[in-house]
Length: 309
Image (cartoon, rainbow, N blue to C red):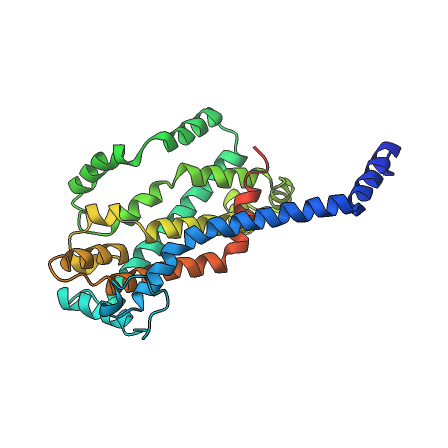
């Protein structure tokens, strides 16, 4: 359809503004100020990471030198394996590979469980018509206003009565019963942006609801699922409260609990911050790597999910 004279005139005026020197200067100045502010605030965000990495590469004699030496000389790469040797000396069953296996087991299983649960719930709210659908969705969203500490004791009592304390079940099994309301909301918003034509064509070809969900819808919401996967992975990788409450055996500790155990075990000795920072760097490295690898999908999933309500 041909553009109306008013639309054509508006496009001409807009293109003329873009070509004017004043507009280009103002646009360049805005971009410069934006990037300058981002770099300025990023500097304060990156200082703790830089200090952590710098301290992890220092010898014990360099720890308290003032002013701070950001680039250690010499660089003590041996701090990384030695930190886990020290931890293994305190707890013989707590090796690096055991800690990594515990952490990955909890994180990956919980992440898979939550993605499956929230995607099915979100699909139900986005596509199916049933009584009190909107009311139930509002109730679900209202749970985000409930602090997790409120349900902490009742949840612990349930798992204790089931005799599942000191197992991984409270950290993994409970997630299969439903994930976070925020994840359901994000996926539902994403699903609402997808036309129903794909599903209707699949139903005409004889597909059932489960086939439509698995074969048609899941690939279409992959950006949102990947964004959620990153956030859920981070939450479970850094989860401290859950293992602290439910795990008693040292050989079951994930990375974050092993780090806390190592800190408390060394509290009676001379501070060994270079080993602590080495373990902290090892703990943070997978998350940083995951963010860099999934950055495009992460941003796409979070932005598209808010297009349509």
